[in-house]
Image (cartoon, rainbow over all chains, first blue to last red):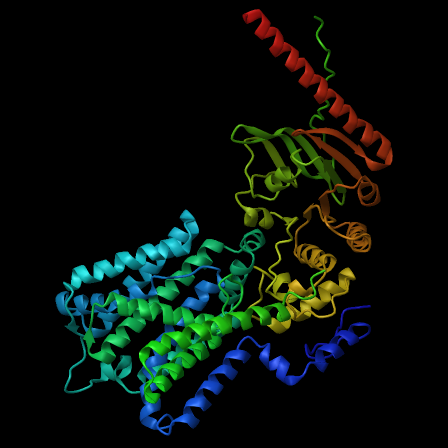
Length: 351
Length: 283
């Protein structure tokens, strides 16, 4: 039998292959949806949303939904970068520390060096990118595991932040308590600013992941690093630029969160919570730690789930202790489900 | 005590033909104290299929990896289509027209058939470099059709395919490029008889076209006589035998391998006796 020669990719294959396609078509719509990488997390998020909407009358108010935004938008942006690193079968633990460190560089460049706001921010983002470059080169060229490397950068940068800030908080440049200026409006201070950044960044990065060579090479390096190298892919370059992307996004979130709060606070433990929430969003959203698989959209929805959970529990007046309890269970269920889905999606027909 | 006489080792010296596309002379390669290739002389004629036989550890894969630019030889010379050939990398070798089907196939399970077919050769749109998936799918279908391989769907991850189909994709990917020298590292490894026949068919068809020359590492003597014009036998880092398949037989190849075992064993015994003598002299 010849390969189906129809020009439309959707056309059913001819001949004996038809049976295969029919079996595929017989899959119920629901099962197909659930075996989408994002299907399960969409369902879980909707269930959580409905639960809070029905069990309290305060959840579905605009005030509550606005309060939800800062609980998810920063994680959605950081998780987007983490997804690229995790598809590479690596992990970046330093994002929390970069998040903490970058706004202080922004402050120093503006207040001490005297750069205007935008150049100071670009300078700070370049410094964040350099941290990613360091992580990427140590992992790809020196060959130290990313877990160990970024654990090192995590502590180094957390310490450095405390040293350069003298462990005191400062007023974020471009912000004031009385009035939210244009710069602050755009970069985190406006009510929907972080939401727009999160949506814009998620869309662009999902396009990069799905429709560009960068995306294909990211999957290839995570799925079969030796094979990708044999095919000619410059695996070290792919790894390094994903670490740079991840660190730059973490730095950006650090700045817009500092602008939103109007103060820049050197709080390493808070930064570590941010790190784990960003990784949680990616993992709940279907990104596998073993690499080769994951989506930015999934991580985005994973971040929404975290936001709904946190906001909902706040409104219900549940103790903050329960948040981590539920979060833990959610991660375990998501992992179990994703592993199952992955098996259904990919590994079945291997002879 | 009489010395055990050790027969001379077989080493094929440099050989040439007028229509050589690739020539290898006195190539040596060591990894630390282990010398993987001691003296390799090899030539490949245009349109020829050369079978490379040899035991595990004889140096077959090292030789392939030198030819494809993955390793650099310690010494020796290579020529490709008349010019000196010293590839700096796999990419450099590919630019010179040498491409490889690796033993591990270099396929990414999570990527689809067409993504694997175009891995690192992706076609993109202009001005924004988005992947031109439509064109790649079309060309993949065409390439697979030409090779006669049955892959029902090209938009599924290759993890779903059988070993033979995966192998076929790896071969189709390499031959649909513009390489004119193709190296195949055990293309029939871990494959059923039916799937193996599929690949041998594909290679026979390719040979009939006469465009490419191939070096194929094989384990099975029968396959060598089915698919190859000439056979070279690597033993312990040297080419020990080189002859057109029409002028030799499974029996002869077998005899040479057995002879080498006998020779190596006698050499080991002789070495042992020398050591024992040295010890008794010293005492």
